[in-house]
Image (tube, rainbow, N blue to C red):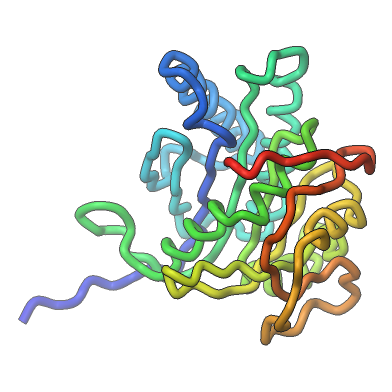
Length: 250
């Protein structure tokens, strides 16, 4: 009998570019080049070796499994703020069709890094569901000056943010429930947008209907928690607290 391959516990980072599919072919080509250049610059600034990342590439983003020595608190606390700054600088003065904005999901779990194609394991499924979740899309769309939005699994939030590693602030995050019924996916997660006021972010997501609380206790001191969500409308709050309308297509 052939021995089963051993999974490894790793940090998983999924990144998706906002509104990629709406771009023309040449715009998509240039966006892919610029997107990966920004990721390289961000990794360099944090001392992360992108050459050691195991990457599954998609046209509008990537799923990366980081090497075992990577620091979870460092990645969670600093990767998205660095990407946000780089993208704000890049996007300044550019027309909308040339701007790059990203959603980033971070999760930790067991993954088979020796799969023939992709990364088998529930952890890879989870991080992929999170980065494509509607709440984080809406959060990024509501702050047009932002370059990136972050969504964390409940486990990562509890292990890193709630413990205030790297001076992280739990109050900067809003708790949501991600439900994908046809995929039997139902988990709590935490969302943050660099540079946004936590109260504004909470109001953005509170414009939706909430019902049954998620069966998970939030971190002490968090004032922006959201227990469960069912979307019903497009009204959100802009970067300076103004009401804006969000197109339901993402």
